[in-house]
Image (cartoon, rainbow, N blue to C red; front, side, top):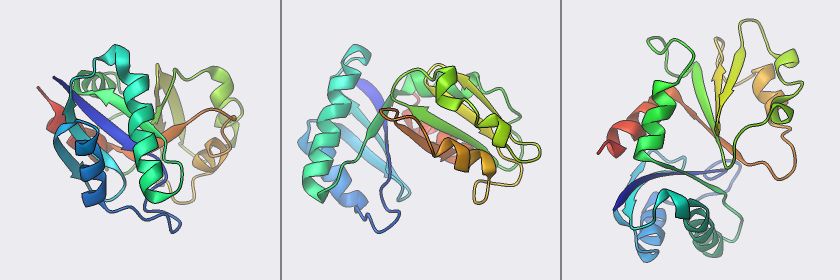
Length: 179
C-alpha cells in the first residue's frame, strides 16, 4: 500500500464548512486505510492501493465523493509520502525560522512560467517564489495575510489548481507520511 497525503482546497474558509470526521469517513468509504486528518484545513494522510501512476484517478474519485457530500467542488491535490519528502528536500529557502513565513503551494500539474507570470513583479519587500515540478515555494517574510505576492498568485490561470500550506503543516504531514 502507498502512503498518500491529500490536500483539499478551499474548505473551512468563507463559510464552506466540512468536518474532518466526515472527511475521514469519506476516505474510508473510498477504500482508504489508516486515515488521519491534521488541523481543519483539509490535510489527510492515508494508505491506499493506488500507485503514483493512478494518482489522477484517485484524486478525482476523492474530489467527487467530497463534492457529493458537501454540495460544492473540492479539488484534491495528492502527493505520496515520498513525493512530500522530496518537496522538503528541495526547498530553496531557509527552513529554521518562523514556519508560517514559508509556504508551499501544491499544484495538480507541473508549474509553468505562465502560471506565475507577473506575480513576482507584485511581490512585497523580501518576498520571493520558486517553482520546482508541481510545488511552488513562497518566501513571505511579513506573512500571508496581506502579501501582495499571494494576492497576485490568487489570480491564477483558468484550469490551474493550487492549494497552499505553511511549512509547519508541510513538515508535520511529511513526518506522518514517512514510511
